[in-house]
Image: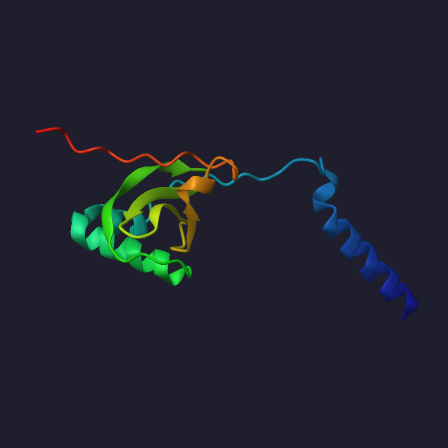
Length: 126
């Protein structure tokens, strides 16, 4: 019985070693921001995209009466970065994960959080 426990413990130790290879190596998984959630958001018109982003901002506990401007900005790490300009609370960065989870950050905090600065396409002068 004791021998079985010792053997079991030894096997667990070997399994935990991951084959005895370099334990400092990491496994990187490349994930791009192109997910069904992001593709659906890109396909929406300005008004519907604004509504979707407004809802995400509100779901995070922040206020947003109306989205006046919004758009896709860039991929950041494995997240898709979007921006939204709310009529009452200013500019927001929304980071969408491949599984559809969203993180909302105030654009004024981007530098202190080491996030990309928010950019908005300014309408052409007429």
